[in-house]
Image (cartoon, rainbow, N blue to C red; front, side, top):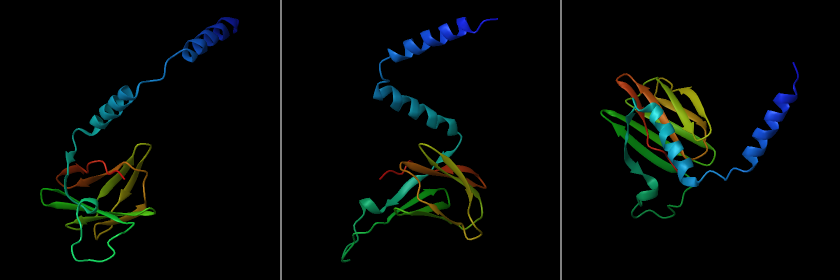
Length: 145
């Protein structure tokens, strides 16, 4: 059997892809939004605090390279401190559970220690944290810069 028909077909396919228009940004956005539905069974945590939206009254030099968040779901609180280099996650009440840090490009599997704490390299933003609590998985909204 000859490879010539296969080579000819591949060449025609390659030419067809060369003439395609770029994917419109709104279609890319819609595809990424649909991708988030793969975790529809996870409960979404509420944003309780974002240091970017709250000023510290009466404190000098509040400029910081750290951003802090607090998310809540039921009796659980997920605290996140994010710098250029690191991300620290703290659970209240403290417990050792599996969690995932997800960015647009990757998902990293982790586990909090017995104090409910986890320290990792800062992920690319936007990112979100999924925590496997005893009552089910809780996921934070996307954290962006």
